[in-house]
Image (cartoon, rainbow, N blue to C red; front, side, top):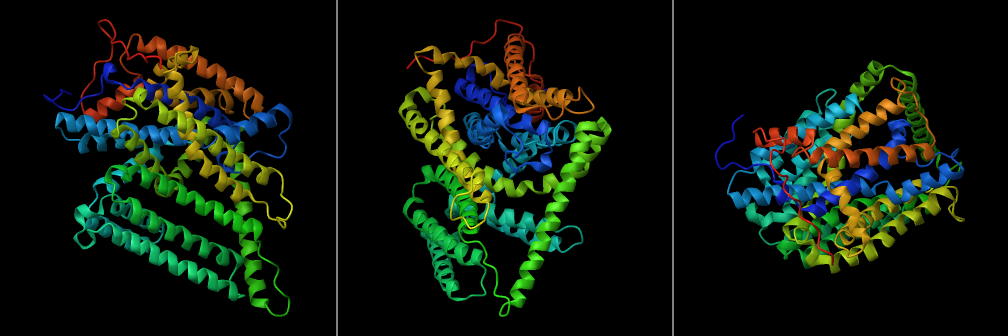
Length: 546
């Protein structure tokens, strides 16, 4: 493939932002620390927390990973993905070249990598999630209202076709992306809503009605307790969104980060609120004589929950047997069977990732990452407040999830704890990123953290390599170490990370890109980038001590 004259090309080494490579390398370590558990445990068991049977050093490691690692590092990678998007967009604008076609090729290639990764290596893939979310980002940033509405109508119509109900979820996702587009840039294409306050008033009216209606439900005994609690909570949240929109939407430059933070916080605030409702206000037992219909309904709901638990246990048992004792063909067949289900659920996850993409994009477009040394006071504040607040919320949740609180009236509080932890993941991840940048620009020995830069430059290659090594080492068709203790899992992580850091330095001293990065760039820019370094390598930017 010949490169057209003046076309958009891959970023050169001397154009890279070293802080992003360092953060990316740091995030890869956290991703492996989180993923290694699910090379020894069924993916179907994801979200179940720490097994009750874990004790001693294994319990302490599980606790550390659960509350200091889990959720923080996919959030960091999501921020980095948004930053990469902004860099690619700004380079295209400076070169006065098309951005859309290379970007579509880029996310299509990522989706293919993710599908192959999920089916052939690891069922916990996140690349497909990023590909779907990257496509959704185009809708939020560039989608026209009429085409979004048409797509929603077609998805709703298609949902009535047998075995196509997943299209209803697609319609809901598109509606969400359209609403985000309206908030971000509604005045550009929607003549009827040129005033930003229109959206704010709509949100406040809906929120106010829900708040009043929710209060009224407390006087209607037949309304479930969850409805009595959640309806006013949702109304309050929507009213506050409207109020904040009216006050802050006029600042267009700040809209991306405000929308990103708003999407993330609203989603997990509602999750935490729903969990708190179940935890502190469990459904009371109905009076035997007066509420036979309600009692019957509750019995049916409980029977459905028992059925779902049984189906989940069967999925876990089937997956565990395949991973621990099955052949490679058995494992691939199982993952291929479950991949459509995995892919169909990505639109829901994309609603969260979009928020992180927008926040990451803002960090670059505001010049904060490109001139990180000029913004060290900001990074100090984010590290100083983000880490204790973010991790602290998770630790509060752990007190609820691991030790029942007196007065909880029998509810386990798991969803409440998860909601608190997810809310804390955003400030914690911003704090972790900031800490890495402060170390990079430190005048102390901490600036040796730059050793992670080559590791981060080869992030895609190293991410896939981690899955290849781990699946071979742990699964039954390989060395058969499935079910290793958490202590042994962390030793495995340390060995793999040290090996990959050394390999990344060795490789990039001789080649311009990692193997998968080279392939990804070739597809993205529809050209063959030079691979081998034929002259003296371009020196990466070196952090100057602060």
